[in-house]
Image 1: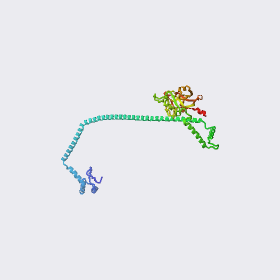
Image 2: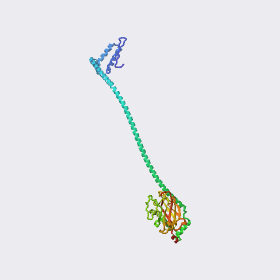
Image 3: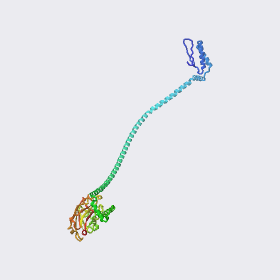
Image 4: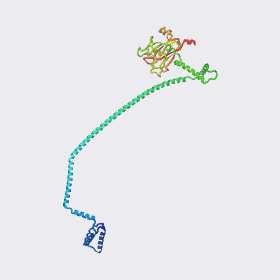
Length: 436
């Protein structure tokens, strides 16, 4: 039992009634006093219920009630004293407000139900429009993909064409460079072959033997270079240089070191020839003896230029040359353009015959002199050898002649013409032989 509750028991019969009395917690002293009075009284004897209540009331009068308790009691007293008509009005007002709310709610539900059909239709329309839009989007995507594919194919085709063009151009450049390289390699092969031939010829020749050196030394002493004393190496070098310079001068005069009696600048000339090749008939200029001006090309120095020759029509022909003077023929040299610079060598003479006779003065008819013609030599010009090839005259035919006839019976394949670049006749004059 708490301090604020007092249990009072009456002894008025077998039944016991208990009443809880609520006290102010702040009035702790009176509670304890009442409890003490009750207990003291109980000790001396049992009190009746009315007496206990009277005691509590006495104690309550002595202690004033707290303000808060009074306020609560006054509020409850006001409520209990509220008029009944106000309560009725309040209830009616609340019911009317609730009815208005319910009526508004019902109206709202009705409006929603009435408009629900339009919403369904709108939803179906929206659904249909959505399917149509989706189809349009799908078609647009497909069209766009096809257009992109076409553009990709076009770009691929363009790129392929560009690559093909670049590859073709690159292949053409490679082919051009390859041809140039092949030409250079061929030229290098020609030079290599010439060098090999030179080395073969050089290796085939033995070096200066002891006898040759003794002969050289004797010539050296005859030249007055040695007085019987010691010979220095510088003196030998000077003498050898002089010999080499003489040989170079002799060969540089005409390239062979042999006099050419068919040279136009020394007085030789062409007196007859077969029909020249001109490509356009009648275009060759000729002198009053019907000799082509181009005929002199074959009896003048040739510098190896392609095309600087005397062409004769067909695969055979002849040329008659009056020599500078009467000589005893010893050799004939035929020259053609070198293969290293030639465009086509099929027009070179192949099978050739050289004849000669003593014509005498110009007043003598050429036909009469040709009746005394004798064979000097017959040869075949080889394209695989050097461009200037010399052929010896048969010793039994070394008679005095002043006119020769050069006959070409075939060439190296050209069906249209023969090209004669230069013909040389070598020998010696009889006067020089008598004087020697």
